[in-house]
Image 1 (tube, rainbow, N blue to C red):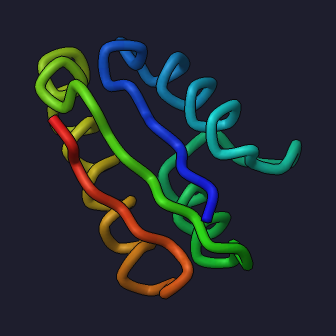
Image 2 (image 1 turned 120 degrees about the vertical axis):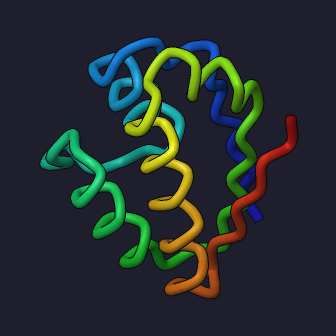
Image 3 (image 1 turned 180 degrees about the vertical axis):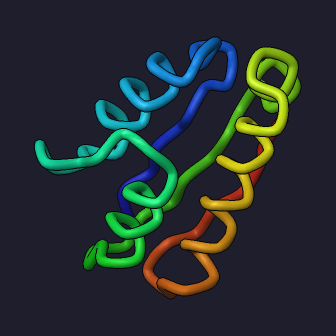
Length: 90
């Protein structure tokens, strides 16, 4: 199982957030750089993937509701795709 650590401290704005997601999750070049596109990419993911989020509070402090929406999107994608596991580590 591939393990990816997303760092909320590195996602201070939406552009940084999606650049970090694109790099860490190996998203396709056509990734739409929005949460709907992230959900679509993750629910179609066909290999085991363990996603860990660190520095959740920094993410939410910087992005507010968008940061919370990212967390919900990751939770929803993991619920939909049984190959994905998501958890907030700290």
